[in-house]
Image 1 (cartoon, rainbow, N blue to C red):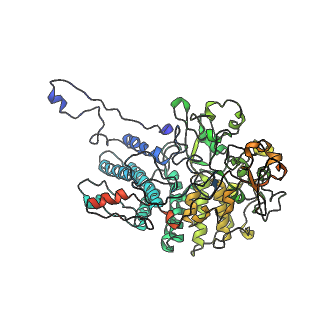
Image 2: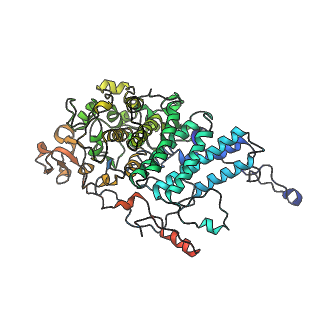
Image 3: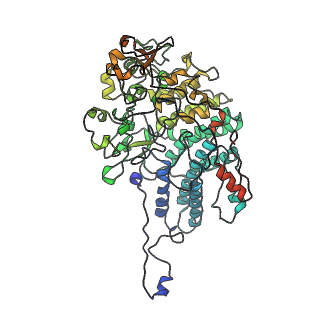
Length: 613
């Protein structure tokens, strides 16, 4: 299934005038529901149709849904100029679609009220069942039914993360079964218990290998299962106070991650930047940290545009803020307020590159860039060569929508961080204590990644290991979060900048107030900058009464045209203001009022999401 190119089965219509008997025969050249389900190869072709929806990577052309950088930018990590984008303020008129495109809701990082993929996976399962005796061996049946159940569980995990309670369907519903077709929402626990059962089946029955690492197999599925079960387990703990369910889901997260980790198939042998910027005929196929990737090839017309927006010329809005930057650990393993590293408390870009975990240097450009709304520019999703073309003409792989660097879909770092967090959460509920060996196999393994030549030349150092016997006591740690879990959360924040995790993480931890800029003023600031020394090109008449910095004591200094020497402080993005106030109802999305009315028109009730009218 190379390049995720969807294969379209052509339909040949034979037309012969006056040959009615012939025309009444079933076509031998047309694929339809009666003659399609006859081989394992056809099952593979049908399964390929799920890939572009669930394994998006960098998408294609100008696509942004579910893409890093261009899609995942709504969280407390990122800030724009002007007023910050807000949450919904009222239920929409409509929130549904029957399209099979990978559409999503940006502020919920998940799908709209669309059950077409549920129906597709149920249809897949039903057709596989019909093939069981005649066309499939027992092991083939187990594998393909596991594939179908994986996709059903994947879709329901996303729907529940967005809407909470949703109607659960385990079969294709005929249009005449109105009572089932117009059923009200089932509780999220009912739905996620069904998902749990699907995922257990997947871990027991999917093939360990089924081609290269662009094809779904048990290890790849296990990586995603660890993600979804961690989400639901921590949601059950922090939102519903249901420790029984929390343990159940977190145990499965650990089991899934164990499958990957104990296989010894994967290891941290790649530098961080190569995970995202690799361009070669083999792509990420040889990278031992990557469980699954999406390969791009201009010759086949499979390209994207994410690298273009990392090339230090294209704009980035929103961009990384001071809150995110402060979260990066220093290379002695301490938060900056406790670190003994020289200049650890100097929060300008140059010093942070030299003093922080290597992922900071690999993620951000090492000087202020006007193209970023906070002046902190992310160049994570491009190789080291791409930005060197700034000021000239970019080759196609670094410009427009013709980029060809591969996208990691599932990687070992996420698996081990899901694993260690699940174990740490279980330990707070009576489970086994986390050991130093657990930390070494997860956080410390990540920190011991090799550095590339560029980082080494800059003097970048690996971060010291995390030691359970001397956990950092970060003065900025929330009082309701144990020190170990705080450090695990920090590790996720450093690892997944502009990827899929941050908004989902603060939602499942019940920390959506991190998005409140009034409560968290670092959200509305960039790093420390001395404009006269670092960025004199902005000390111009056009910036008078616009350019601002915030001193350490909170004083705001505005550029007057004659106070250049005083323009030293945390950068204040232009015309910035906080997002509108929001409440806890934004943890879950409302459904459309039209959908509720449609149910009423048929004599049924569809319940609105709590907190929404």
